[in-house]
Image (cartoon, rainbow, N blue to C red; front, top):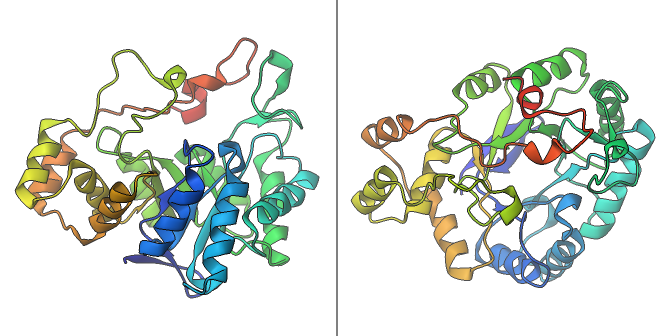
Length: 317
């Protein structure tokens, strides 16, 4: 397994298991199987509405003695309805209880988007708050306090633009170690990659395979597919690999963390084996030409009637 170094002599496994879109009943078996075959990094979030089931699988795996807790990397996220400083620790403690662990390895602000307390998914305009209502810096201070209390070892963000990430870094006492963003050959985010490398921030790539199993309401009628692209398929044939393994290897070759989701045992093994595949310069050059700035998860679901959020402002593009 490939690892990346973090402050304090910590190491994060470069390939993990994503749990977004993993249905109740399936995610428990997937996490148990993943840990059994060698995964040591599980990416979770309360918004995925399956953390208690993930926690059951984690607790049983740890109790079996397959590995000590310190060898399993657990990431979770602070949802948009708990950014008030006094809400941060209770939200984290709820996740810890659901996952049945005493601490997280990484806790991320899920989106630079605010909902009113108690609102899981907005249904009307007054369910939203503007970013000015609770500055990110105040939420971040509460996260820093959780580090001090030993509830989480590292903190970071998701879906932050360079502008938003840089503004946070200017005010943070503990700098974010991670920005989890959509990353794949159609959305290569080279400027973000360069910024994060310069500032010693890691990137985690979500939807590294193109997220074709997203809910229908999140899809566009004419969106492209990654796994079927002739360049990806040609490279896969060349290496005797699957297109999915090529996409994951591409992310690992760029020194990013990748968190593909699967509940299929064979696919779990294929994804894990992608860490053994190394693409050459010809492959990387061919894939670099595929960038089209295309987001599968563009945040347009936050643009409901009366919402203060727009896709343009979300990404600062």
